[in-house]
Image (cartoon, rainbow, N blue to C red):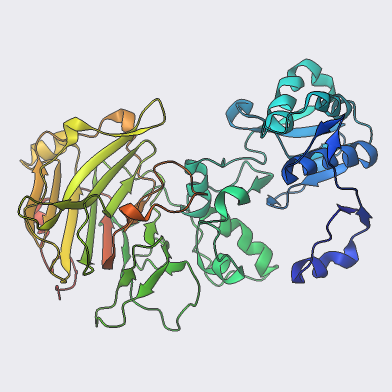
Length: 478
């Protein structure tokens, strides 16, 4: 039975319309004499009214069922935790109920005190508070049943950018459309789901294949570490595919054998350069590369070729960012005293107040070399455990530019409170520092630049590895 006030339109609805029993419901304007204005709150009320009368299984349109629910059908009423241990509450995006279930009647009665200004109090927080007191009336599922990964920045990144979560503990997953639709879900279609290898799309792909074999059967493997003996994690040439894949985002293909396909958002192939590459306009544009799930920044090398696009010089624009859970290691633009545009390394962390601040003891002097000459330059950021680096008489952090040491420190060590597991690499931008993926993208920190030939190693390359222009199979500059 399909309950509606405004009947959906479009191709997808017409595909399933013949399977539905339609039941038109009135538009809710009040509940117990209390005003209900927001469309989401109106839907909250309707679902409780319908479930109390008819019973059934309610799923939000952006909640995807991954496994059968037959083993739960004997329960009177079921909800699932939102947040670890239900720290946020019980999410009403999934409800299973028998007709006239006791808990749903009790819950609906609390709407006598409903306040439209409270976004999720009656829909999520309040059922979480009621459940412990009426445990015989409700079955509560773990947070991983339907509502993990969460809607915060770490959860959205795990779903839409990383290939790191396998959903083995999930019965379904909420894809948090309201938080993701403006940026992470923008321009999504079936072709994007088939070509972009992130945690979520790898789960959705079998539904599109409808029993057919995946033409890229290895694409969705989740690695804990590189499988190569040389510790190469990945190589992304960023050269144009033939035939051209006409989607946005584009896939950043990894040819190392580790199948770590990344994401290119609002980037264009550089047709004017014989060596290929990707042009990022600086307008909501970035490259994001997923990493094996146990990659550590304590022994890590990132190598890339970059050409700054002509234009205004700005400080604090992101050339490359290493993402950890509570920290960011940023290679960003810096304006020298002589007016030249260069780069510096800045490390920031999330405080207990959920704000971002620079770690002052990790401040390094900027590179003295001008990068604003409309030429490609080779960059290699090398990080190694401090004791290991000292054992081979090398600094624990070095930034090479065209084979020369431009930034280094013998005392640099990432604090454990920042967390050392790499959760992806950004080129040309950074994850929103306000943790709000649903807000307009902050283009002030985006870098307009050209990128090509990115290599990542799960080790800190030593000086003996000859990190220099043209070494390790990298192309010559042009």
